[in-house]
Image 1 (cartoon, rainbow, N blue to C red):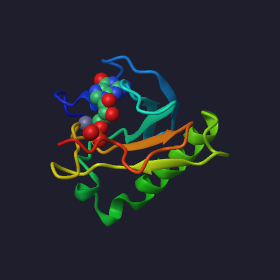
Image 2: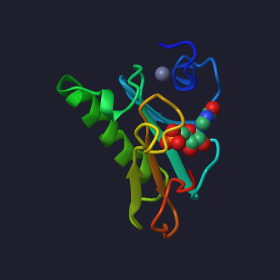
Image 3: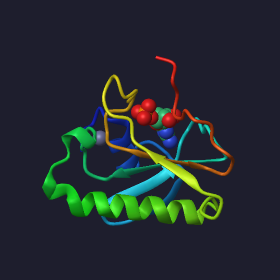
Image 4: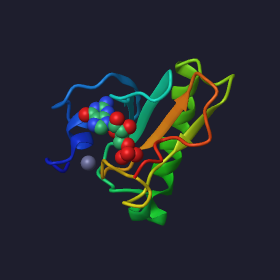
Length: 119
Ligand code: 5GP
Ligand code: ZN
């Protein structure tokens, strides 16, 4: 737990979030500024800054996160139509919150660029 990290604080229930699903190691919640009808974030409960900071030993955790992302898309009704999973990494990747997260976007036909291409 990194007390200055907004997503660690959501995991600790110090900051409210609309939690969709969770497992022992991962949590999924609604993005506060949705860019599509379905826009959830799937994160590890432990603090890893980004995919760049994961190691081979995180493989089971990453598998659990991707499986949870798949279940989130199903639970939100975005699965049949198709959806997008993406993770921004570091400054050039456009990452704003330095706690690993995967965006799950769907519920409409998505454009070529999401999330953001403006900085
Ligand atoms: P990034 O640009 O780092 O890939 O995406 C960060 C995402 O986190 C953004 O889509 C933003 O809307 C979302 N976000 C930032 N702060 C909060 C928050 O306090 N609660 C929730 N639910 N989402 C947040
Ligand atoms: Zn964190």
